[in-house]
Amino acid sequence: MATRTSRFDRMVPAAPEAIGPLRRELRRFARAEGASAEVQAAAALAFSEACASVVRPDADPLGDPGPLIVSARVRDGELVVCVAHARRGPPPVRGEGGYGFGLAMINSVCERFEVRDRQGRPGKEIEMRFRLERAPARLRSSRLRPSRSSPRR
Image (cartoon, rainbow, N blue to C red; front, top):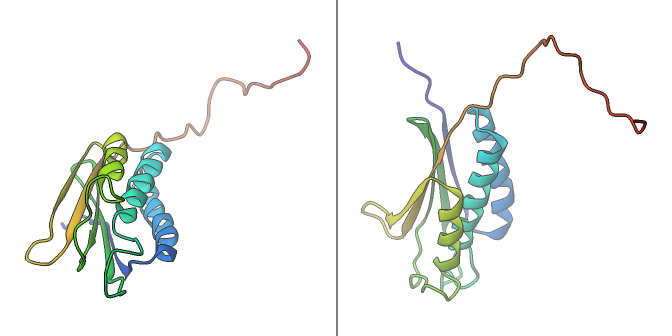
């Protein structure tokens, strides 16, 4: 019997206005896969930082933003998010609005990440991995009575 494989694949213009809606879609995907709120927030932040490294006014000297390619999968208990762009301009220089600070931020919120050349294509991709801990099931009933707060003591 085949197992269900959830996939998130998008290709949009590498423009600032595409980032917000894509980030919200990614969070919904992570939530549907059982990611906790903390993992969803970490994935959204890392995604935004990865996009900031490629969605810049000076990214392409010809003015064509090109595509921003985003994919996400769940593998071996991890949410794997990959952000790729076929940059035609010069690669970013560390400390000059390039990968420098963004990679430090990504490193602080994910389990591990890797920046690599796209296989046989121009540009780079950033793969980020987040431990996917299933959100705890809420108890439907409890023997304990709900607590009530009161201004009186």
